[in-house]
Amino acid sequence: MRGQERSPCSESRRPGIVPRSSQVAVSEVGLASERPVLWSLAGSLVSRPSAAMFQSLKHVLGAAGMFPRRPLSWAARSQCRARLSTRGLEDFSARLAAGPTLRHFLRNASPAQETHQELEEPAPYLTSSILEEARRKVYLETYGCQMNVNDTEIAWAILQKSGYLRTHQLEEADVILLVTCSVREKAEQVIWNRLRHLTALKSKRLRSQAPLRIGILGCMAERLREEILHREKLVDIVAGPDAYRDLPRLLAVAESGQQAANVLLSLDETYADVLPVQTSPDATSAFVSIMRGCDNMCSYCIVPFTRGRERSRPMASILREVQMLSDQVLQLIQERRNICKQLHLPAQSGSSRILEAMRRGYTREAYLELVQHVRDSIPGVSLSSDFIAGFCGETEGDHQQTVSLLRQVRYNVGFLFAYSMRQKTRAYHRLQDDVPVEVKRRRLEELISVFRAEATRANGAMVGRSQLVLVEGPSKRSAVQLCGRNDGNIRVVFPDTEMEDGTGSGALVRAQPGDYVLVKITSASSQTLKGVLLRRTTLRESAVHR
Image (tube, rainbow, N blue to C red):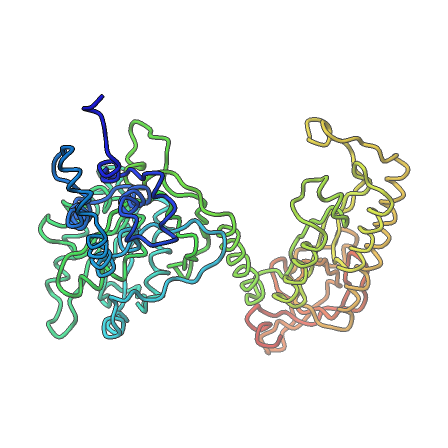
């Protein structure tokens, strides 16, 4: 029908529509020749474009004759084609080259990449003078759930990269950022009350000091942006959960005395390339975020509207963060005398083929790499492990690979068993328990023999050396002996005799459960060290003399 007829020109002007004929040219001839692509891509990557962005884009496209203000007649469409002449295209290309690029409109959309990337270099609008001034102190307060704890660590990682310093003293702060919760009304009221207190602090700021800037981050920023910015002018910056990369720019804008906000939600932002920096030096736990947002749309819940659509973090990014935390744990074990230097690394088999059948998720080579990493990180670490002899499909060659792993690693403690099929397991339903019982028994005996020989060698290296021992109590085998554990969690047996009290007074005492004592090792077996009691000591003293 004539009333529904559309020319190619009018089709190309509809926002969000990309004609097939124009889809190829973005990479080949640039955005200047692909006018319809610009808004289509912006609409797909920025989940909720602001009115200001829409008007700016409308103005640019309208100037090029691409965004009609009213429906065009056939004659008008003919004029449109005339306007889009070579001269018009050149003029539009010049305008587009001088104006904002697609990257400016999509600044908050980050690619979900699996490879590690460094944080971006400072943006061009952050001059050297601003960056120097940006070495101001930031105070962070976190309210709400574990995700907000993680958000705080992400925000701090970004600000630290941009040159900001951290303070835990509110009075020292030049910038105060509240990471907020919006799940209940009471949580929001807590923030409003806190803002009034901080505003009073702001008003008392000395004129000789730089102005105090206050920011609201997270869910409440997303939900109540307008009210936060305009209610009593309490806040300088507002940043939603997907806008933390923009914090340096927002703070730079605030330094000019203006309020700044970015609450755009993203379809793909997971901060995959940002390694969170723990904000509490005394933290005893850490959270690893694996996804952001929520698609459940529970009838009572605000989360999908404040955190956006559900998207998963790339696996490589998660593993990288877990590896970082694991390395921190290894470093703590190495540094702290009150943490036992012993790790349990269950191998189960030395054959990659059997490990795959067991669904262990690693190979022999990966396991040995982990062992080397642990020993490099914690010199003298004691290792224990589990092994299964005669698992489904295990050949003599597979068994010998397990024997060689025992010799190569040389464990201090081992737990070795013959395989027994368990109902309801995957092996019960999918595999055959095809290794005869007598073969399992023989292989287990060989594993135990090799383990004991290697453990005796490993423990024998401590003979003649003094060991710090935590006294547990009387030995189970002798009433005149005491038993304890050394720094590698290996059992140490020694006579229950009088010893120096460790104060230098010359007084003699007997060791009690919970005491730390020095024991000189005189003999070693695969499971036990034996020695003579020297004196009582403390962790602090032993750390000085180690």
